[in-house]
Length: 382
Image (cartoon, rainbow, N blue to C red; front, top):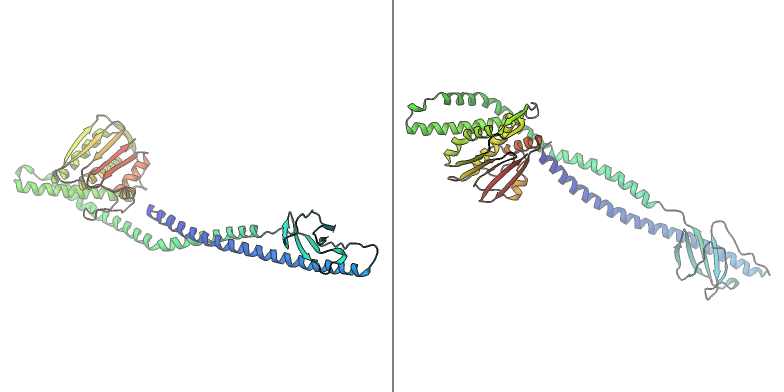
């Protein structure tokens, strides 16, 4: 999976899931308070019926005119009666109630309902009904349901994202196949051109022919460099690295000489400061690809009649140009495959993708400093 695909999936999933979860949270919160209010109303209605029952029993006792009264007791609820001044007359409540100003309230694990009595049976003006409240599991049920909905949402969103990205992925595969076919077709003509250029006798050429020959060499070197990048791109994950102790100083000098002709065409000077006998354990072809891509980009994007500085120390390699430079946004996206910021210069946009794969393999750190219209400096540290 390409890095751009991962980013797209992350962005879409974040947006989709955050909006979906916000909607779910809003609906569940509304449902929770609605359900809680409904349960409270139902509880109140039950206590109200009990209140009517106890009032009827008090009325019966009041009408019997017995000298001894047995206060009514029921298994489903407890009760208490208060006089007109809200002083307690008698109570079977499990908890002491200090305030009966509210019609309905909860206290502890019990619910209470207060009603007035008219006429005042047995001197009672108010009844308080107490009932043990059953534990409500609305929140637990909602949490369980929310988890199920979230899991379904994640699975659905992944499916939708992959479905949306399928055309993009197919196009990328087509591009990879095109590069593979193009690379195969380029092999023979590039080899032929390079071989024949070496056999030309420069001493027998006049100045005009020499300039033409130089342009052919530069064009051939450019095509050859692109060909090597395409080969690396296709075979990177299929060929194991042949690591050895490399003399980085010698390799860098060789690559500078290789690109000298390309730099001369733009009248660009290559100023080198290469310390001798700098060694690095790595695969030779990969290190050459790493150097070639950084150096060719510097020559390609630098201005004419400028100088490219190439510095090698025992722990760093830096190449700086005086070109158009890059913005911070461009630098952050530079390692994406097929990413191009300059349509005029051409190319496939694979150079820095190759650089990234190589430096990651060998734990080489890269620092890119760039300013628009000032130039770019690329530093490798190991």
